[in-house]
Length: 297
Ligand code: GUN
Image (cartoon, rainbow, N blue to C red; front, side):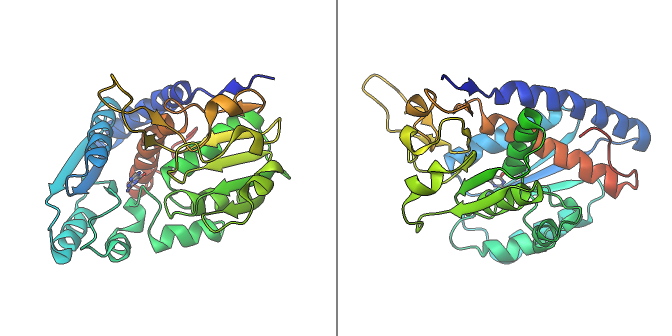
């Protein structure tokens, strides 16, 4: 069996079309554009690329993009003051502080300052708690995108065995909660898990984001598994290459021969993340303007 390759770009394009309509309707109703503020501290090259892409996508969807670039040695109180200013700014519906922050800053304390109603990453204690409690919450973009892809493909996920590899606050933890809410039997695997191949072999759904290129081998996956690879790893350049290739956490060439469906890297999970960020921003904008939830997102 050769796997279906799940087209994240096509999925994201459909979602962006709906978001564009909702963004235009928001502007009609309120007389202003929905706004997303992105804060980048330091000069990490990968983060700079992400932030630029987020800004472009926000404008393309008919929303306002506010970008704040601060030096790596920004003191904690200055960053907190910026977050508080954005919390109070009525033109800002969503706030994203790009992670990881430089080591001199207390990341958890900064996150806790973000207004939960503008927390489009779903990482404040309020939104993380609301997700666990099964209440309405803003939810981290990559795991929400993965869940949307799975539901689009399979409809009902009830009773399926799902293994989430990775336990970060932006990915593994919310991913497990979302799958649990869909009635999956969820196992969380991580760097201390014993015998990962054995754990993975019983999974109907595998979702991975650990940042280790090709960690998951093809023969660790059961035939018929659905594999979502959230890894974005840059390999060292091969001779003749200027930059190394971007690859996932799953050995794609091995897996594609026998699983049921798999997301490629690039063009899979990563392609959906920014579209979901725009989705969360427009949802936050509607709710905060007292317009309720936009339908169909
Ligand atoms: N760094 C890499 N991905 C993300 C993301 O989705 N949100 C934030 N805040 N930082 C990131």
